[in-house]
Every structure is written in C-alpha cells, then in structure tokens.
Length: 208
Image (cartoon, rainbow, N blue to C red; front, side, top):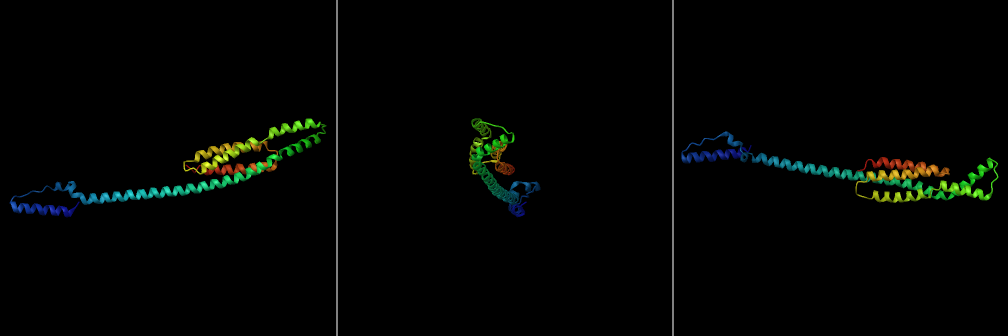
C-alpha cells in the first residue's frame, strides 16, 4: 500500500473540509482501491520483469549448454565413424585376395582327401566359392551408408534416430561380411567395425 499517497489524500480531504465547513467521513475500505497500490503494482511489475529476464537467461544458458554438449557428441560420433572407416578400408583392400585364399583352401581340402581333380573342375569349384564368398556388394553398400552418415552428422536437425537407422544398416552389411569371410584379417577387422558401430549407437541415444 502506498502510504505517502494515502497521507496526501487525507490532507486534501481535511483542507476541503476546513474550507467548506462540511465534515467529510472517510471509509477505510476506500483505501483498498487500486490507486493506492500503485507502488506495490510497480514492484510486482518490476519483479515480474526480472523473473522473465532470469527465465530467458536460464533458457539461453540451457540452449547454449545443450548445443555445446550436442557438438561434443557429434565430434565423438565422427571419431568412432573414422575408426570404423579405417577397419573398413582394411577389409576393402583384402577382398581382392579372396581368390588366392579360396584356391589355397580348396587345394588343401583335395590334398587331405587325396582327391584327383581335373583343372576345369577345380576352376569351377573356385568360381562357386568366390561367388558364395563375394563381398563386393556389401563393400559398396557400406561406402554409401558412410557417405550418408557424414551428411547426417553435419546436419543441424535432430539426427539421433537417423543415426540409429544407419547403424542398423551398417551392422547388417558388416555382419554379412563377417559370415562370408575367408580371411582371418578380415574377420578381425569386422570385429573392430562392429565395436565402433556399437559405440556410435550408444552415443546416438544421447542426441535428439
């Protein structure tokens, strides 16, 4: 309640009463009207303004904090993706040695079983196993998925679910390579690739 305003009001009433000779009765409830609470209203308005400013600053700080956290997560994802790509390149470089690996295994098999086989028949066996163990399609699809993953990580939009989907696709191709592998080196690289995919998946859960 604005006491100074009430005092001034009462003073004015007394002066009017003295000048006119008419007694003026004052109803105390009249002081409950809004005009006598301007000071409090001002304080309330000021408090409300400060509260809104504090809220805006808090939201701005939260947004900035989440943005920084999101950027750090993206950098972590990029590092895991980089490590996955390095092992992927190893697999890609070894895939052309499949033919020699298959020939060696078939020769060893025939030798152990003391089988006599014509050269043409042997070549047919080699072709059959090469087709069965061929990983060219998986290699190509992984390359496409990695390109999409790069673009997604650069996107300002919500990317958590997109990354999770891409990890599923990469994991499928990686598992297929592992099941077809005729090389210990490739199998070891596949294990490392899967480990990096799992780390990417875990980090992606923290992204919106």
